[in-house]
Length: 398
Image (tube, rainbow, N blue to C red):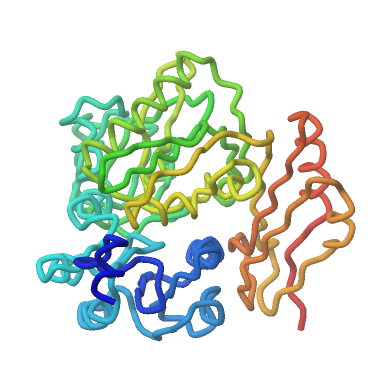
């Protein structure tokens, strides 16, 4: 046995794909589910921690632990059970992560990057200090400070307010257009961003392993629902000029390198009406802007995240087919047990790939799944996407 392990180079490390290696995931939502599906190809043992016993991952993982990923003791004790730890949501207990790292556990992405990304104020200061293009901003502790700044003409309407912590999927973000909107201000530590007239919103997912190898996925173009403030449709390849595309790709690579981060980093950008590219936000995990890669790229974003955190060679992100991805959101005025209407009708269309996340109940605008439509012709993919949007609905029943 000794000579066998020596021959295979496994003497001083636990094999990452073996019956004994355990990968822990903090969070059991749809991102965790798709990460488990990617890991199943390699038979990786997955252990999940989530506060919801009916979460998407609960019946898929090898071990499920019920508990809060925001509680120090719960996260710390969970980390002691695994050989490598990652997460599918960034709002986790950072102090437990730091202590686990000090004791030798590898956590990817690392706490150093997560500390910056968890706080949108620190994120903006990071972009500013590294001269990454981003919109002008100011930081405030509460609503009163913001109102004082308005009265002193330190900031002017319109502007965007973002909560420094806990915001995601459009939550914790509000556009203040005029004085009538001031009653909507959050009374929390927040940043005020200059309002930018946006032409397009795009995203690039960059992946980096411990060896420092970095690969990006092709740039995607995003269309948002104004009512839900969520991505409604994603198009790949994007229609942006090559000059802007190349700049977005380089910025994504530079940002993940400056963060010294291992794993996936989704970088969202604004393109202004004047053609200026600005970094909006980043997410240190698989991301909604990369779901189409399951069908549309040689390597999916979920497999790439695994390759990165396991320090394997990163996979090719070559586009196999043009694609459109749409989110399946709970219909307005529907809350309760979920049913999906017209699935058969949509599956009759070639290239329609439906992903249901397994959430038992729906509510207005809750992410319940996504659909990726592939076609050699992007315009035809868009036509099919419109058909799916008009037919596949997420509703409740008694």
